[in-house]
Image 1 (cartoon, rainbow, N blue to C red):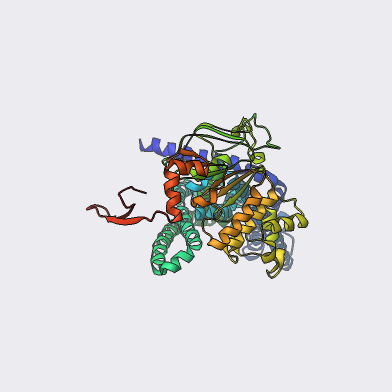
Image 2 (spheres, helix red, strand yellow):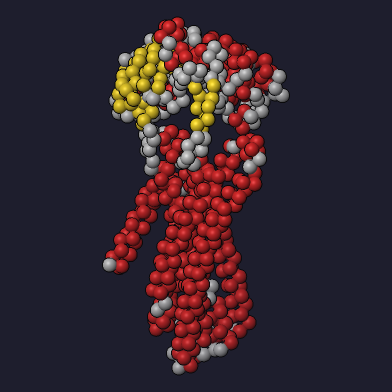
Length: 633
């Protein structure tokens, strides 16, 4: 039973390695010329290593301990007539030339191997980066950013061991080992058999430790991913940590996570050290056996001292590849784990993709129709339940409702960041899924509550809306968004490099840049997700006046918590629990006296809420709003 389980485990391991090789083989092919040159240099270094012991044999058998058998041998017979001085000079010169050539070939092999490895890392990182951008939001919401960064950087660097180093080292060292064994067998097959006794033990030891190292490395990379995720979370939330004075608390959390990562790394290191120690002991035992048996053969006259010296030198050279192959096995075990983490990203298919019959979206008018749309987040509650309404071309529709009613989810579906789980969304009479994703999104402009800016120049951030825009168009859109004046006051104007996420600008300035970018995109459909929610009253008024210009002639959907922002909308859709609760103009909804009317009056201060505290024996106290007279708000 145990043997069957181990056999199955080994089969799965090798199938996983083969799967990884198939995934990364294109990058190996792209660097095949460099890898071939590295292999040729490795063959040259291998040949020099085979030649290295022979000058010493000449000195031992013809100068130091001359024997009649050595003088009559086919290999040394040509040199038997040389003087001792000529033999010593020739041997020294040969050693020097062999060492120089070996150094030349070995250094060239190392450089070419590093070059090909870096080339593969460069190409693979580009592939993973491009793929990450195209994966749906659901994938990114299930993953921690720091862990994804770790896969894109550290894991890919580790893969270089598998893609280049392991490939070349495995081939070159394997050829060296085979060559040495062939020469040793020709010299003395009995000694070769003694030397080979330990090979199965070395192989079993290496295999056994490799399995443990791979499992330890998998645990280590998981822990390192969590540390990276924690660092990313801290950098995004450093203002909140400082505001609450929670630096020490975060330090303790990080220390615990970092300690677990350290322990996981130490376990991997201990296993690698144990494997090296075990292999060294086995190789030393093999060398001792060959030396004991070889000395007896020299005493019996069956072997010359030079032959034994060359054989021992070859034995050391043949054991060196075994050591390297053991180290390669250890590195391969860790590289396979990193490869699994990278391939998990590459093999993740986008949840939103183009259908075979999808058409390019162009010159859209913006007529929207939602027909019983349903959506549920993976592992979460249902966000939309049979949502239905229509939007005419050029119409301004406000989307309001309590938190969690599915307002932002609706905008995400319109951009095809997700696809509905049921029902249909039609745009100009065609199902959204029948448009190509990229062309559809080119027809949509977005302004978010929290403006998204990049750590680039102001000009580059504005041109993100349309990459082929010229300087005159960029400046014109900045003027429309009332952003030109403050941009000109920056140190280098439009060429000012902004801090990450535009942190050097106020929220109102960042929102103006976001609106200017939407102006530049000039799309027929405009989606606004609470664009004025976090602004002061003065800035809110200024932004609203700019947004009115932006909305002209465009189909606009604005999600808002401040109901005054959508008072002038052509139609207001009130959502609750993923359904349409009310729909109509501002005046119509006020006359009905429903959710919209109550909350509008509440926000305008015409109804002032009171608060009571309800306690529960099993839960902490919670604040519950209520109105005078008992009507809950």
